[in-house]
Image 1 (tube, rainbow, N blue to C red):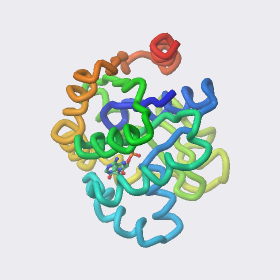
Image 2: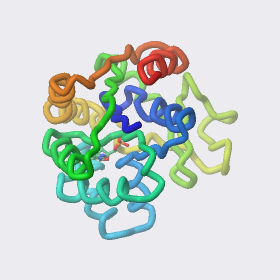
Image 3: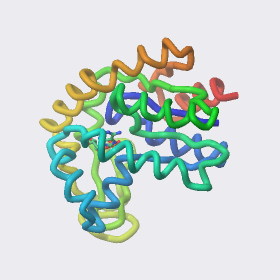
Amino acid sequence: MKIIMLGAPGAGKGTQAQLIAEKYQIPHISTGDIFRANIKAGTQLGKEARQYMDQGLLVPDELTVKILLDRVAQEDCAGGYVLDGFPRTIPQAQVLDEALAKQGEKIDYAIDVNVPDENIIRRMSGRRACLACGATYHIEHVPPKQEGICDHCGQKLVLRDDDKPETVKNRLKVYHEQTQPLIEYYTEQGILRTVDGTRSMAEVFDAVAAILS
Ligand code: AMP
């Protein structure tokens, strides 16, 4: 099964993608995670991607499409995958569709995790991340045991640059302008499904699982 998760940044699509990956035993592929791993490793790709990410802008399609197509060509993706954060533009979606069509394949479902902008801004300003080990928290919903300190490695937690209110507003603007048109794109293909992302994580996943079964 090949699944795309759509939704604004902070809508919870990453969490749902992770749950789908566990339930269906397929890889969870996040282009954001791939970029962050490259930034951490100090690669050329990471250096280029960072300039855009820190401002809440999209990394150009030329860089993004290649890493995604390389990733889905790997052996562990033969039985399907769940994409989280890709595609984010119509050209990205078209390139993916064309690459799949060459192999007689297609995306099965595009699931939109729908959350209004006001909820997103509230959610993201409460996020905290450990830059040392990658663990993420939320000051209200998933607090660390000791305020400001990572449970796993004891390092200081921070509000990631791309979760700061100004950047979040920018990311939402970019989302509405560049990514939301994908809702229409996948509706026309007949594979769009929408879930209410304001509900609890478990309730959202029940709705997702009902679609996939
Ligand atoms: P995410 O972790 O999915 O929220 O992604 C974090 C950041 O990585 C985004 O704000 C973009 O700057 C960049 N990014 C991730 N995926 C893509 C993509 N498919 N196209 C362009 N930029 C992306």
